[in-house]
Length: 397
Image 1 (tube, rainbow, N blue to C red):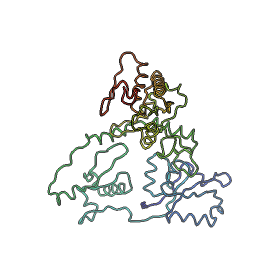
Image 2: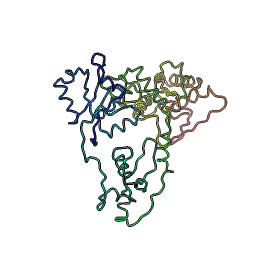
Image 3: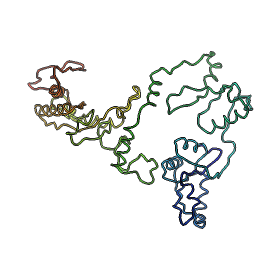
Image 4: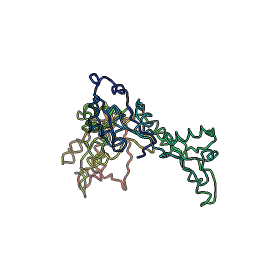
């Protein structure tokens, strides 16, 4: 972690409370962390200077980054941070004001040039790599402005890959190509490639349903403890994160207990844990639970397509169909379940189960449509027997 040239104590709208009358002021909460310039506050705490001065203040110890998160979430009134990080925090819209500089260090931020470049004026016409929005960028601009060369075309900018990422790359190509590859050419335009297009598409995705999921988690799962700086983390997990825990619905979707309300959704995931139709190896009855478990590692967002299913469809998991250990009865149950979902105007996504469940699923679909039902069958062989070993097994329609 860099400690920039100046270190600020930043306060939000509660800034005036520091100077209010001790009898009227609410307790001021200040976050600080492990850096010598800020640990000095501990001297005043242990010696009781704040109490003697009549200042009602509580200092709260954090790791550095969580202290900034706590300030941005309004869990503390003030925080110690570097001037560079104050710029980043301010860019999020959090109002803040520097009221105290408790260290000034000279030399941490600098421009490093090739041999022979000794003055900032010698950067004119050169290409400089810089990370936008940070202190080094600000200082470089100020220096170039002071020497009236800021418009000399010294920066080589990359195409922004999304609204969230805008960077200027170090010119390694220009440094090494003439010496090692013995050629010089312009870099190709790759903005039309799928990866870059997907990055741009990601920046345009809405986050309405994502925010609704967080609000639901906080309402049903209670806000996090006081030590949790991230305001989006609930006490009890009720959403997608973290991936390794929570109730195993498919993609961590809401579980719909009352299947009579399935018509309120666009898509319903349902398990058909049936493997009585196998002729060799059983075990696919555990397929729905296995698919739910592995799906917890993923999200509804697809990078290549630039689509977030959560923002496009209202989806739920309605659990498993009760499948008895009997081929006829199990198939009848699956048929009724699929027909119920589809007749409610919702698309069923069925997780099996052995190959034999295709037959009862198609029967359920046929009950809800007029005319013929089309089937796309992907398999290494055609399982279209009327019966197998005198039963409708996994090799049958």
